[in-house]
Image (cartoon, rainbow, N blue to C red; front, side, top):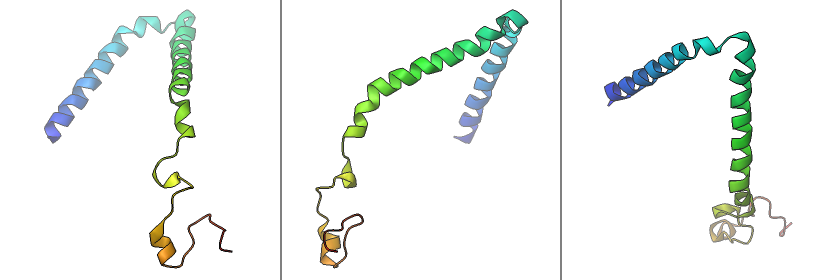
Length: 88
């Protein structure tokens, strides 16, 4: 399994090096704006898309984040749950 992982790593490294060699002519002075600007614009668009798709997940309660959940095990031991000041 380790040899397979190393082989995949080296293959990806070879592809990266080949792409770098192909793009050497594009790294001249007038094109430098596109080399740095295009990934910045693409990542900004991805950020907006990610926020639009997953912004609703912050509004849902999962597992122990539910404030209406009663934890009987803690109550049986006579302790108060963290954040619960009703017994003070």
